[in-house]
Image 1 (cartoon, rainbow, N blue to C red):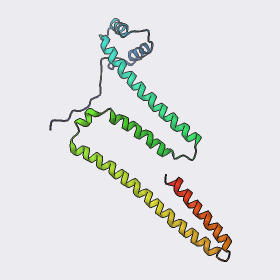
Image 2 (cartoon, helix red, strand yellow):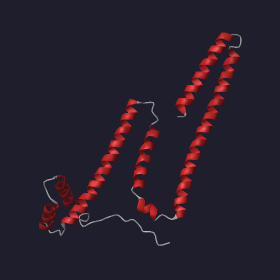
Image 3 (cartoon, rainbow, N blue to C red):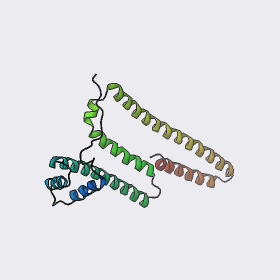
Image 4 (cartoon, helix red, strand yellow):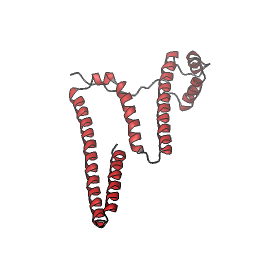
Amino acid sequence: MGEQRRRTRITSKIDQLPEGIKNEIDDLLLDSTVTYAEIAEYLNTRGYEISKSAVGRYAIRQNSVASRLKEAQERTKVLVKAVQQNPDLDYTQAGMQILMDSLIERISLAQEEFDDMPLDKAGQLITAISRTNAYKIKVRTDIKNKLELAFEKFEEQLMTSVKNHPDLAKKLQDILVEAKERMFEEGLS
């Protein structure tokens, strides 16, 4: 196989300008009445040889970064709102879902990288995902088994305490069965 291509950070002439000039360019880019040609001309009069297309490429990168930041802020707002509205919500699950959505989006845009990925690396990724899923299933099963054992012990102790009162024993047993069902439905979903 050929040598794997390394991704390098994109730097342009604009990225190499002093911070104050870059801030001015960013401000000019926010003004939709100013063209890339006008920004390039402004830079040329200040002694910086920058082409209109370089300004355009820089603007596209800046817009892409701003768009990603905006999307991340929107996802965070949704998570915060959900937690505020539902304080009992498992926000770690919601956070993991947001992260998973971001990763899926990243994966969907990385077709070229997947095409160049060695087969052994792809196999390692598939194995890691499978292990994570198996671990999740194991943890849920362990929790369910421990909950069942705890309920059995609790029921046993209650029934021993009220064995001389059959009506009360029946009511307590019904309450325990209902509590157990609710706990498993809500706790392991």
